[in-house]
Length: 428
Image 1 (cartoon, rainbow, N blue to C red):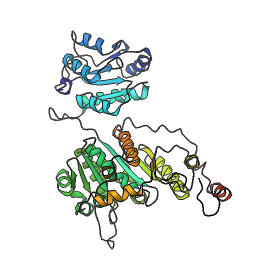
Image 2: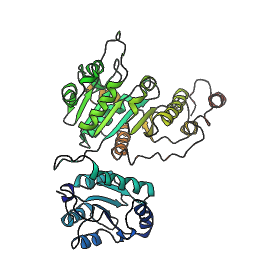
Image 3: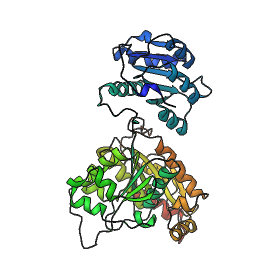
């Protein structure tokens, strides 16, 4: 589909119109519209069919909000809407189907944004402000698609919890199953395993970038990154152990900026110690995935990192992933772990040593080598969650707590462990 609202400039026309199916959504929309200086009367009752009839005999507005709730085939119906929209119209769709694939297909068809019901005033306000910004932003070349970008940092709360396995697997999924141009940045400069997992030589790209940040530009990225497949490029290093990391971190920020211009997805395999020396690495990261395990040490460090994120990267959406989980052998039960960190674990990946060995022997990522395993199924769910993410729609839905440390009591957990656990057996 070649949506006409993606080309041309708005002429003398109304600033805004909306066609909404239900009163509840209209009640949320009208106060925001008035706040932005538009007329509440521009919020019309009726969905896509009403919009097509009205726009076929009148001039399209600069910004059009359209309700797809009553549409049986949204993508096909959007084609019909495109026929009556004039060039320059920015279209925001709303609906009640929570499906990542539909969301991506709508954006690919030329829709500016898709909002999920029930609407909130903040959600609507942000979407309309971003739509207005289209008319003030520098104009791209005609026909050039608006590039969306989601940056994800993977951090292991302890060594060996599977953070690098997740980083490579998610990168592979984004680039192959979701067909998104993806950059993977392995910031374990001395001991990173990103290239090793993908059966590649790491090259000198990352060390050159650290040594000469001023050289980093689009051409540098194109030449320095190692191609893993048609949609996945890697930047990593195996720096000599006797060469300490001498940088202020400017290179990392510059690399991430270039990735935003060249790719749709960025995955950063971020060693936890980097948070101490280079906190600004997370400045523009959308998602922080914390890989953890069901142990006292990991519970403690999950709390500490969540607290750090709340202070230093509150814009980033945290996802907690319990990795290598074996039924009946956890040092801490899931309930006690969640009580200690004062939030739910988002995903639980079962331990599968045989699958991990298979991936290593094949020189492939975990999910590529073990497509039908239960662990791979969970990692695919994580990828789906992240694929629908962006700076404007990632909102942490966890309840606000007085203190991340409030419910964590190592002494009580240890006492429970000593009281209930027979000698030599792990606590359940």
